[in-house]
Length: 235
Image (cartoon, rainbow, N blue to C red; front, top):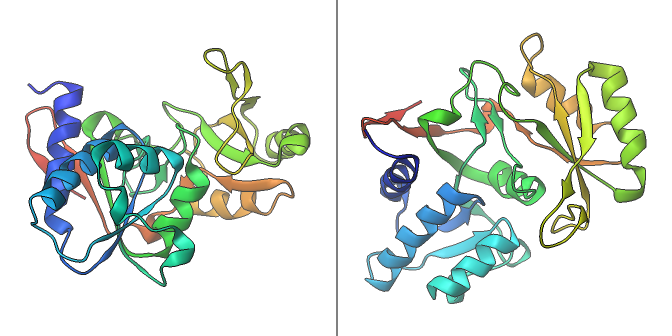
């Protein structure tokens, strides 16, 4: 049986199979995506891909690209006119391929890149599969900082559940601040009685909301799942 880290590494290596020459590639945030970036870096150093452009979804991707020595392949979203493929992780994936993302606070950049990619591939280990979004982790909502309490009240009034401002206790104390200088609300609500894509659209309509961590199934090309046996399941 594989460990959690080994599952992440295996599915990251598996995802290299969708990469090809002459593409603009969006790379998501999170630990599994960083394993993918590490694998991609080795392929690039070995000359196995030609004319690859990497578009980062967050400052995390930019930082690790620098550490891995592939920052010369990076371009910012405004420097490209298309995104051919995006590779990203997820905090949860439900039985219909709806995603929950934003545990690391990078949901807005991730959604912009993922939703504008022609193909979106999600890489996860089997622990991330759930029956309903919100079963294990809260739903992140990025908000304009000074309006966070108003947004929180509106969300609870409309859909119920519990909601809290994400607070850091190490390194920097106080609210987490995103790459976009927003705050993150963590909303605990299992979406077992409502369509996640509907909730995604409705929450986005609340004034003060920048983005919500629900990623609708209609944007997902495939989900690659590494099982503890080592087998890769494609959804």
